[in-house]
Length: 461
Image (cartoon, rainbow, N blue to C red; front, top):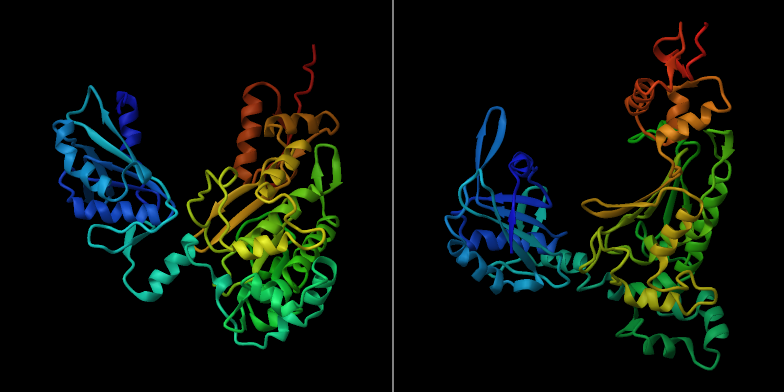
């Protein structure tokens, strides 16, 4: 495939920032070196490489310049490497050309793969910031397998007595309701929840009455309430000491959802109609918390966190997206890192994952129905973070003008509260834009933090 790059787009093409998702390479890049980058992107989150770009660094930073292949056949060694690493299952390619530049650039798009992709030196790589990191130790390879979902920590055995899961209140109640004619230990073994006579992590999480005592700092949920809308705040803005929710997985989810809902119902915020109670759809809270608990990486010794702010909820689940799933495909693709936990949780009465595979879609649709912005999913180096914002779908300008239909003036602080904009400068930009359109004017005599805006008063004839 060949694409024409308009002259006006070349500057932006060459100013992209190299990082975890993007890289430039010169035409002289060796196939072996390129294979490391392809391996790293495929094993992490996918990414893009543009081959045919020179880099010049000086004290002012880096500059990139177009210097492409003289013809498309000159890139054949690169295509040979791509084919060796998996071909179209891993990469797609296109040539870029421009009337103002000489030669062809090769644009390579690398997919995040379900399996591990090795470079030509028979070693896999991962991507961290703008670096390709070699995976060469047993521990590093194990970490990659866990990240990719090839191996699951749920199958690890735990050095405790079998009766912790076979004779627990949770297990006995489950057996009586669901499988009354089988013995717990026999049934657990048939479900591969016991391994060589020892409970697995999955069985502990599902059936132990107190999994957190057996697997500390891995399977509780911490709930924080911050009395602010600011980001990056410290413990001084906590409304109370963090709450710790414990119990077997099915109970853990229901208790965390109920506790979160109770805290949220006590929050009031300024809207265009005045103070109102904050609320989120029950389905949204339930599905996102369920997803965070069932699909997290339990090999990471960190509890799931729910952080409640005045205008949003943040749910942080340890571990990156598993398998081939990316931020862009998370609503469409399915991959269960903890297959046994997901399957067994669905067997409980009133299971938290009633509609397997539809949870996040349900959460998004529930927000749309009440005209709130969709949740936002991001990925950090070691976790998946979901933002549930109490932000109306109307534009900030529309919200400001609707507020002034029933109020005489509006301040920057109120503007932030009702629009969901995070910074003072963003709200000020909205005010200024409305003033240029003749829809707002600044209230005379009010400056600095007290400054306010209003609809223009009628001119005296």
